[in-house]
Image (cartoon, rainbow, N blue to C red; front, side, top):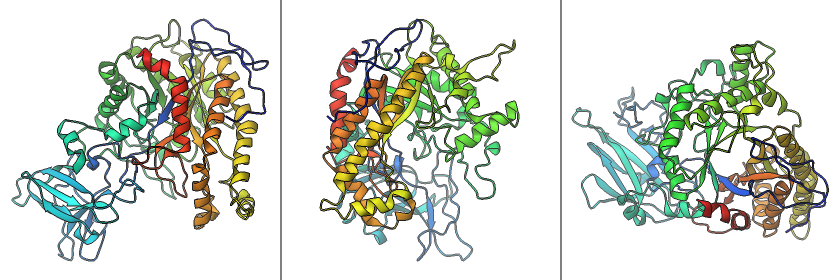
Length: 575
């Protein structure tokens, strides 16, 4: 493990009624308080047809959108009419009268997960004709049962289907409940398995699972469940989104889960892995939505498991629609000079009150710790941004008494990414110079990453640890890991992208991962959350520890497993 060049000592004390406090940083390090053990968790990567994680036995659940095809036209852009669960009820006919098909991409460009010459069992209900896209090299064979077929991929391993006829007799018996299961996993499906056994194996060591991307948190969903879109004229138009009600939530019977994995499925995964859950409530969820979500978790989650609850994700981040929605709500409720982070703090506290009430736990963190941990997050490098959401100076109760957001929180969350500015266009010239070194520039890049942990991350961990202690909160990360991606000016430069991808594969990354986590722990952090666990690298970033489901090891994943072995073992046995 690398030795950090900064002093990260911590002496522990206790404050009544809260889960963690600590003395000011300085002096020699002491052992962490046994009541606040260090733990390792992970986020899950998003659900999509290009995802290399393949979390579900039924690949239909991660497939793409339906689209209309015509002769010599991959996608006509014509609208596909769907039932309430997302199944096509008819095949549209264009103005030209030409025949149409409905296409579906199930698995494509999933880097290492889309294995060549693989057979999939495809089952369905209803009447019509379904087959593999022969124009894309797929073979279609007859299945062993009625309403079943076998499709076999070509050398690329992509799975793409087409509906050529549905509901031929006009009786509403359209093709639906399509299932796509890899042939060797079909016995698992018949036994009722939802999750790919290899996926469960990869995530099983982690103590906490965060569902931010599974819940599609960085999208803004309208009241009817449709996704708001950004436009150059109106931006996110957050004021038109409305509030998201419980009736618009994702359901297990939906054709796909790419617009949100149902709470039923997330709870089932937690019960399977015996991990604590971290749920991200939609930024515009109604109280009823929050309450019913919490009730389902209370009634179905293993009672030995804990829950972290966060309102949305990175509401401070103007790249996401939730920040714009928070600004709209703040100004609607408190005037044009209102601050969006203060609204975020207030609404986070209100969401926390609902969860605590459902679980019959104190809303203000008084008394013994409960199962529900309410999370407040802020930007890692922006010192002071956290204040308004913690203090909520404009928030008054019905009697005019001030209500402080921090009194309703349990955890103070930041990111823990390490990077050396290699994603910045300003650093491109230096990186290109490094690549002329005999070793291709890797040693200088690794040294820069190490310095970033020592000189940037460690002091910021100390700062946020101190702020968390001032409010009697636990310091956690909500995302952490290798944070470099290709700068915009180099998106067409494959050599630059390949350099960053190769960099995070280097064996030296193992020690950098350990050093980053250790810096956080020694500052007083209690829960260290890795970001991506299985996802393919690209110019957009190498966010995940493993690159595809068939990969069992990497320096980054090995480091995380080492940390879970060291710090999670005792916590697992407690369950």
